[in-house]
Amino acid sequence: MTSPAVSRLYVVRAGALTTVQDAGRPGWAHLGVGRAGALDAPAARLANRLVGNPPDAAVLETTLTGCAVRPDRPVLAVVGGAGCRVTVDGRPVAWGAPVRVPSGAVLEAGPAVNGVRGYLAFAGGLVPEPVLGSRSADLLSGLGPAPLSEGDVLPLGEPASAGPPPHAGPVPWPGTPAELVLPVHPGPRHDWFTEAALRTLLTAAYRVSPHSNRIGLRTEGPALERSRTGELPSEGMVLGAVQVPPDGRPVVFLNDHPTTGGYPVFGVVPERALAAAAQAVPGTRLRFVRA
Image 1: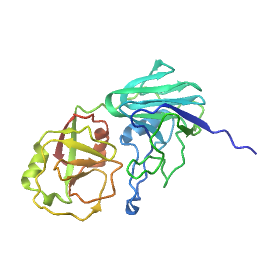
Image 2 (image 1 turned 90 degrees about the vertical axis):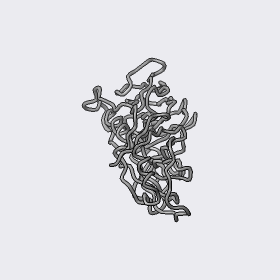
Image 3 (image 1 turned 45 degrees about the vertical axis):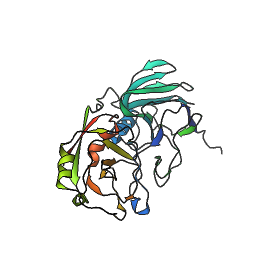
């Protein structure tokens, strides 16, 4: 008895950084394995819902410049997250809504016109081999599928239903923040900083640095003054930790962050606020507020 043919997705244009992401692999930090997963989790879940997938199905996450792919079977797809021009074989189609992509046609998500990270979901999801229960690429550890390159081939799963998903009409997508406001819970090492540093953090105007990535959102602005010098033994790091390296400028840890670190953590940003951070373009005004 022969196995059914596996459907495939061919990468025509990889873009600046396109990775496979799902809900991530939480629960492995004690073994030094980070979470990974889609940085803008609500956008990834919404894209999956619009094509009839489970919320944790694997999608493509693009960065600023989009990507282009070609399926070898007809597939229902959605391009959401960062706003961009979407085409099928050069013909404009809807952004943020399900579109039919014929077998052999090229679906292209163009450069972002707002936001940073786009999400391409396909009915049936992407099904590369999972690692520790997740298909997500982790850029820091190297776990999961490698970032996409031209000519790569990804396996496509079979849709749960041959028909269109229910309630797949137009839906509101979150906008790109003109100003990013991040609430912070102080600790665990806020006592390594002066009272003036706390006032600086909560009153100064920072900006999102172009050196930000999936590991952390870096900031440009005034340095935070330390009250203690010396080294801090490495300790556990969590999603949303606001770590302060030697230059004094806060870094907000995102999904591919290290599981341990030796620089003091001033505070922690709740996970619910991090989706907006994933879409904040370099130069976006940033304010920290007390959670």
